[in-house]
Image (cartoon, rainbow, N blue to C red):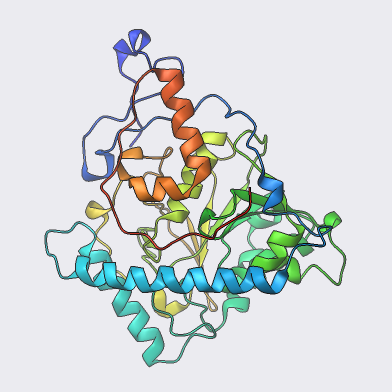
Length: 356
């Protein structure tokens, strides 16, 4: 389903820079404003990442703070998911039911590694390295020059194979807390630091920060999942929506388009057949290929991929925690002369306190 540009848009204030998605199905209810201009150079990213030569960068403190914030986020997600799952009118209730079933199954069958429990995480499933190796044998991976990989533990081997294969690795900062994306390349590393560079601390220490103005082309997206349907390509993440935001921002940058392959690596027990496609939202990202420890599945998904950021899904609180989104929103509003919509309010865990 392609987004349509209305015939009268030439007189619209959004005509030169924006296209509008009009409501038609549950997936296309949101207003969509694709960005066709570059954001002014983002400032101060280097004070958060790319600090291998910074003697004040405390790796232990950085990791301790990351773990503290992750714990707070999971606790809050657990509280929110319990409330939403019990409300039959909540559009996200069915997602939490499926996630809990998969998380419970993985714990009961002991098919995950540290960190445990797997609840409210992208599970670090047994055989993640085997799945990563299968992913690396895909033609789309072999031909890729730049690969975007999520920062979760089960995709660590994918990040290593990307770097070790001489490709550019694009990795988001966890929950976009300390910046936007970081780029790493084999030439920036040594044999003794390449494995460290595949961790959260390593990305902060060795990565080169980029902003929305960066001119890059991403050839392949690797995304983590809690559950995925091999017949439709429908996917569920852990419920925070950052994978969708990252995808939307890459679309804004022109780094990807609807043809850019999306791959996920999961355990075979994370394959399910009851994700209702008709209930997916406009910003949900489907997958084209699934790699498990035992097989590779081409989904031939027909689910439309998101075309950008859907502002009416973003809460004021989440917007308040992600600086780059605030800058982007302000830029669009200044250029268009119109105020963008905002999503419903939500309770979020605190972010790290950072020096300016």
